[in-house]
Amino acid sequence: MTENPAQNLIDFRDSFYHCLESRPDALFELCDAILCSEGPVDTLVGLSQVPEHRRGYGALYDAVNQGTLTQKQLRGALLAAPLPRDATGRIVLAMDISNWLRPDAPTSSERLFCHTYARGSGAKQMIPGWPYSFIAAVEPGRTSWTRILDVHRLGPAESETEMTAEQLRTVIEGIIAAGHWKPGDQKILALFDAGYNVARISWLLSDLPLEVIGRLRSDRVLRHDPAPAASTSGRPARHGKDFKLQDPDTWGAPATASHTETTRYGDAAAQSWNRLHPRLARRGAWEEHQGELPIIPGTLIRLEVHHLPGNAKPKPLWLWTSAPDLDIAQAERYWQSYLRRFDVEHTFRFLKQTLGWNAPQITSPRAGETWTWLVVAAHTQLALARELTGDLRRPWEKVVEPHKLSPARTRRGFRYLHRKLPQLASAPKPTHPGPGRPPGHKNRRPTIIHPVGKQLSKVK
View 1 (cartoon, rainbow, N blue to C red):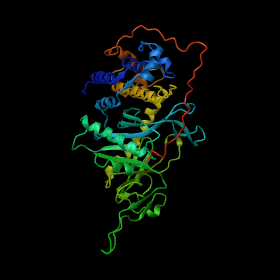
View 2: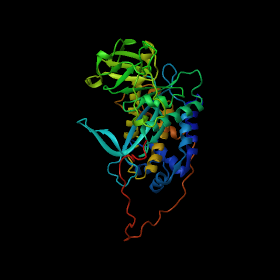
View 3: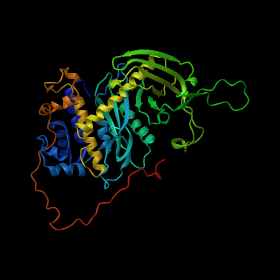
View 4: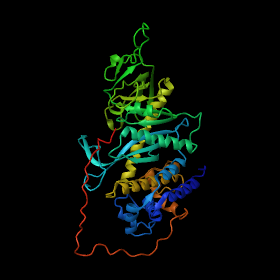
């Protein structure tokens, strides 16, 4: 990739087109229809009416259901594009799962119970759907932009921790192969929400230039390093005193303490304790571990802010990072980097509410993956075109600098940029629809009803 934004966009579109195997022209024009559609995408068939989609609605459905693309090649194109970095030049990745809910689709296979929140009451619900794991590179400062680098649908026979580690390994190796990271650069930082086993992910990826930081539940218990043994007889202790997050009497003196004035949260007080590790047990992910269980040291950070947006009552935020010894400047940089993880929520909202990621009523999970990759490719083109499109500002919207346009305002002007881009898809050929099922004949192949949930016998 070059320093020319227009050339970067053209190169990515060319790479994306060559990733499409079957029905390439129809899939490519469907992606353009997502970008050039007026308003949010609420139906799949509605995209056939967009002028940039020159084919009929039959070709559109055929492309989604029968079209194929090379995911490995498309992932390489996503990683080859310019990556955002933080203020120190470090690559920061955010991992999170977003659910494509399919509660009324009993004929769709490989659905899992997805964790969601009920509106109004805040109660948790488990709704059938397809969970997708996203990896995105985040930018410095408050923004609604991220750069999606990979997406993977979690299957019924997959372990979330093992899948996440393998997905992250693939992305980091691709970043290194693309030349974005070289020996001597700062280690890549990966951000995780609560629910991820960050200690095991750190251990599985210890051979990579990676540091992880994740949120912990407030009821966790960590351990200090053991105190020096008074005698040489007997087996030396592997764990020190307990550090209970809910019991301040067990904390001891922090290694660092700082106060930072923020514009959004007021005073942010941070404390950190070095060389704390979780005590592992031979169950769950460590059940089949060979040999002695490892000691995974890290740094625990406690962040407490004065207020939250919307007058919400703030609670302390506990973070654990695989970097075992942090000074005060590093601790501040780590928790400030972690706050950028929440920017990926803006990306999920934009994918669903504007680009229509979960709008189609697709039955096949394979077709769902094809559609998901098309939406990711469309979002990447918007990220590359953010400095190239004009601002079609509504009268009530504020004036912003061209490079600070939101994803929605960038998409609003993409149609005019699209006219200047090379046309890669060939012109459609005239055809006629097939005869379909003869009148009066019933469908003698009833659709199979698939169960929902994990296949526990196959999950390790």
